[in-house]
Length: 497
Image 1 (cartoon, helix red, strand yellow):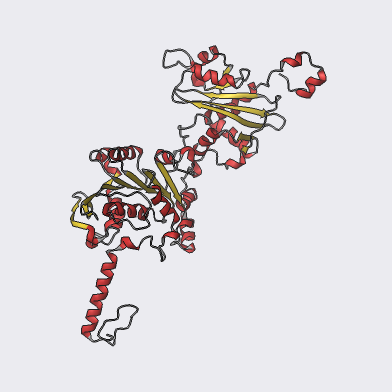
Image 2 (cartoon, rainbow, N blue to C red):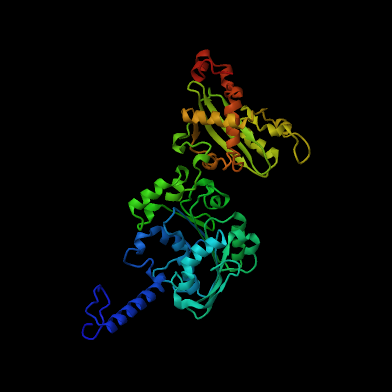
């Protein structure tokens, strides 16, 4: 006691106080800790201190993108604060207590919101705990104690789980937060329109689509936060077209990637221990937030190792194309073969869906009617539309086609062998080819994932069985009257077919 006032800060020895003063001191310290624990929201992203905004630029980028994009994904490494970021924003919308620096989406009214995790148990242990605090200390999570209205409604089926909580909004109205789980199934996400939906951990696509439907009327927003341990899943690919994080948002979607380097609260020793404890194929996903393909990648070769700048194709190089047919997508890959060095160059691609064979044949012939092709052998079967054979139909349209060898594993091996020996290159302009290449993978059972492979299939058709039928460009009309020397200068001996 000093001048009649208790000194609370920076005091560790209270032996000089009498018993009543010590009792009062303990009571005041407990009250101080309790009040501080009930104001957790205000400790995040301040102007100063260890959690100041300038240290967490990825989190702030995620917030700011909400001003423009309705679908945002924080696809990040473990332990960088994904749940804190999405939960922090959710609470701002529930309470209306936006800080002065906030430049993201704002609601000027109370909101209806869902917060969902993988199972009811993980939703309780992670989301409920982060937002509300332990059941015996409600108000010590991100939602301030004095904003919780009454007793939250319990979930009758899950011990210690909360189903619904009402939140006081700064306008005087009431926001409503409901906890859900993916394991409940898509139908449990039907019904009431929502303003804000937080999805913690990667959701199945059917549930994600259902959530988007719940936001249509309200023009609401969806916040995702997860580490992409499932690899290039359907959900991930909606935010990463072609397997790459876009530099800017695409349509209504925006993705923020964050690594351990974006989390200053993680110490080097801790990061090293975590990194070494992870399986090799998950290290990039867990430490960098990069979708895990790992051992599932069919061609684990860096793009830069097979990419070359476009150049004019020498006329004495044989050319051939591979054709993969289907109503959803038709894919064509053209290659030129440098026989002197035995290097195959992918020089062009074509990919189009839901068009008649006449449309595809016209596009193929524009590149050179003289170029032969190998086609998916399934085209020898009947066309589902009218029973005709697709191979015959394309031949009638003027294409020179041969059924390809469709030995999958043999074809993959030959392509891979060429890549690893520097005998397979791709023109930089073949953007769609690289988009498929990045996500060409095997599933957990080792089978090739038959999605987005309409350029990958014709690539192996060519390498396995197309080079034998490749042709050089026909001699131009001028050569009929040219001297032997002129012909030799234009097309070296031994290259004319």
